[in-house]
Image (cartoon, rainbow, N blue to C red):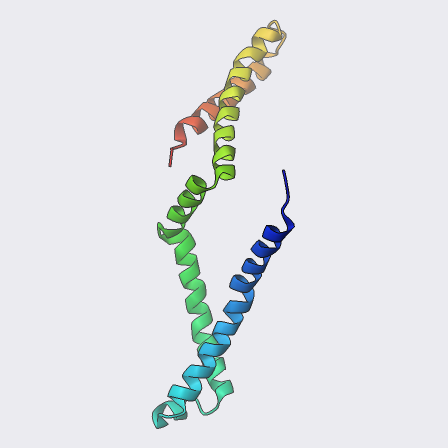
Length: 149
């Protein structure tokens, strides 16, 4: 595996910018612009938010739980995250190879479990044979449950 320091640094830069800096900068910018261009100019809103600090506190008290809920719904209750994960697996050859390797490993484990009693010349105890059979059934069940993307 070759490592290209320029592209690795570029990737880290984009992640740092997009995840941290741009997020914080956008939040500060949004709060500042909305307060000083909108709220300050309307007497009713100025009564609700007498200072910029009040605005930040009230906005944060409403926005943070709302955004946490939106994030939870995105990951747990909608099909959006599943679609993103499917696209990542389809587009990323490394993830696709891991999935393919997992399928191959499960199949080979099932075959190995079939061969162990034959190789052991029936020197396995009844409990060991039951355990192997149970494991084999679990693996077959796992293989049957899996679906293609």
